[in-house]
Length: 404
Image (cartoon, rainbow, N blue to C red; front, side, top):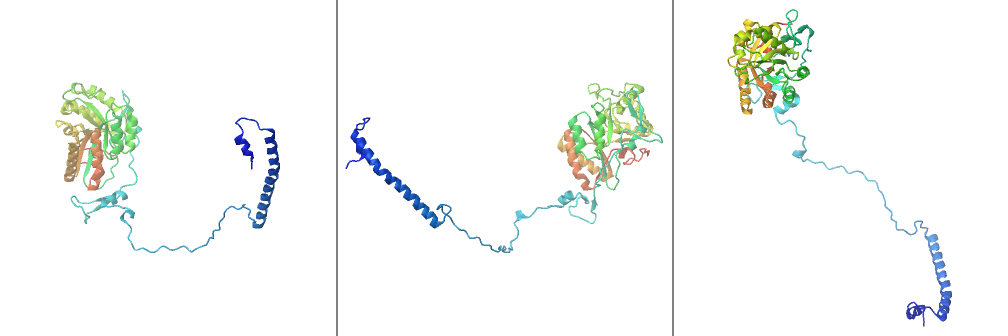
């Protein structure tokens, strides 16, 4: 039998078919074409018949039927196991935590760790203490260098009007003055924001925008004092700055320089020496200055850095309120030394009822005082402003106190 492929396989590659070969291929195509067409028709008829009989609209694609049944929820079995420790919400772990969270300070006798019959509970006031607005027009006059304080009608004093109010209470009291502010921006901002409002702040007269800086401090509740540059023993090697009051100057010249200093900002309750060991040890040079300060309704604070100061001895003669710091907290500027002096200040307050300390505006000093102050009131000691000593409420009742 001969098939068409035989011609293809036996014919030379690229050769043309003969006339006989073309005739045979044409006959074979006439025979197979009707057969192929008939097969296609038969397949279509068979598929249509199956579709009619089965009725499957998906064309025979596989399918499945799922039955959904509703069931009652199963209640969880009761358990008697205690909750795990980590699942229990943690609460205050000590009395100190309770005091901190509630804002209530529990004051116990010194040396007792547990509550006793002598426990005192102090609830802090929710309202912040507000200082009076400065400048008060009743207490201002125009000087050669600008506005300066004056004594108001009825002997109204800036010392009384601009002072931070003392809430009163019992127990030992401590006043602290931090001075040297108004020059370094970081130290000034740190003192205003980190120190308790009851701590008084002293500002040097050389800072820029002092009026606004002091106003911000007073808005935060801090009482303000003004530093006066005074001659030290090693002047001019140690120079406090322009307008320094000198022992060699005549009283009118020193009072003119004092007037310039007092015109730098408003709202201060008194003045404090800046250096000045030599001038504060000279009664002839210091007394006219103290008289001028008292005549303008202000007080004078001796920062305690010079043991030779005669300011307290001249207070009555010069008719000016004077207060002297008993402990200089950062005379040795080291953290452990400052902490030691703070403890000594606290012990002195416990023994005498009142203690007064001073410090400079070193960042270290501000940090150590702030840490100490956060806990001292819990030990039964009240922080009070420096004006408490100046106004005759401290341990020296000899100081005058004129009320507004």
